[in-house]
Image (cartoon, rainbow, N blue to C red):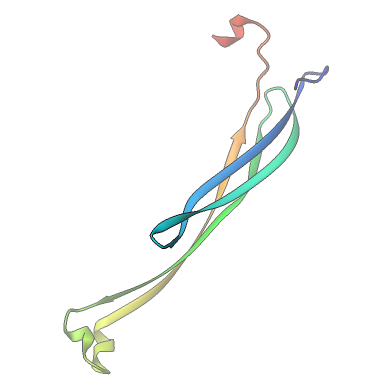
Length: 104
């Protein structure tokens, strides 16, 4: 909606879907959603955030055979834990087009 003083009123909905756990061979879908309403001036920019993703992974590297030896094998292998976090940011800039010439 465009207000009389040429501001823009927008209802915004952001969805981020990702593959979740697999149950009986069928993957589930994880959905993160943000809904908001913003009033912004013509040509201004609004940033929508708050859609976070976090994943944790563990890994182990070892020298073949030597890493499997009890007690001494620990000298030939390493393990690591990874904690990844990310945020989806969406930038929106509305511009009011007053004539067909504005499209060029």
